[in-house]
Image (cartoon, rainbow, N blue to C red; front, side, top):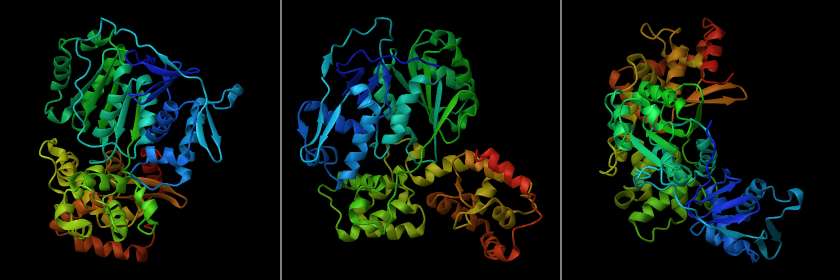
Length: 495
């Protein structure tokens, strides 16, 4: 397990055992990072700037949420997170004071710590991180977790469906952790690797090392390797991760639609951005990360864009229909100029064709939502493709028994379905959830729209839909052993 190295290139604001690196937006306690979200760090920045004086709640909200309408409770939640992280009040130590009328005050004595010289033994260049094409929004919690875990773990894998923002998140983590790795952070886009045998050569070439015995050459190094888009070269990534056990100073941060499935792997599941109910009041919709991202993206194209009262409900519905997927929201925002927000929502009734015009500079799988889903679908086995297509018949969450009753056939026997369904779950194409009445599965709206079109082309839609409608009349498919259900639940980690 990796130890943690304190950054040594930026002066830090010190208070007690803590150090606040403002440029990196990180707080450490005795050299170890604290899991603090972005809003909490924004609040800390303002309080530290005015240490010793009270800052009103209104002033803090205006600085931290300049373009949003939020309530006092949002501020109190993040203040409480800071206090917990600092152990405020423990052993008589007070860091953040509050006054009912004057606001909050950072009360601890602060000191500026001097930076020290960078060690001469490091690589000449310290990173090759590309510029991020997408903003990071609504990811405070997952970023806080990753910033705390990645330096201590040999392998961390961020998984999730296509378009959920895995590349953006791992790149942001690498940016923030750059100064914590003496030999820097190095980014590898594996979508360009068509042959698994090329992986080690590409890494060695980028680092200026020899292809042979890469693990030995990396053994004395302290660096972060970011492997983006690993799902199509899993075997090579697994071999690399195992080889780097002999290089304890190297941390692997991986993005993949499927975990590597090896020992010591820490898996972080990335969900879509939080969406709001279209029945919520306007201020709650405005505070929803999916809607905030959509507004920011539209605003970048239309100077001064401000939703009117009717737009808030429509924006919430777009966020829901697109599952809070940042890529889908970005592609939808690009159409608002021509269609308006109401027109975008209307066009989403006609499938994913609206979401087909992304940035030409993006990698191929990020240029449209269909391309992103193609990337996953084309890597499925024939049976997995057939099951995924047939699952499009379910327009509500479904059980394993319902799957067996509705989509089984001579080619897809009942005995195969639990395993095939578990494979689709592991590849982030089917979502599994534990409810009070048992396990349920569902497809994201965007995934269902994609495979529904494929299902209709096969000519099987009518037959499967008829079976779906009649399934309640058939009963719970008594011929299926309950053991199959338990095995699937075990495979997806629910028992």
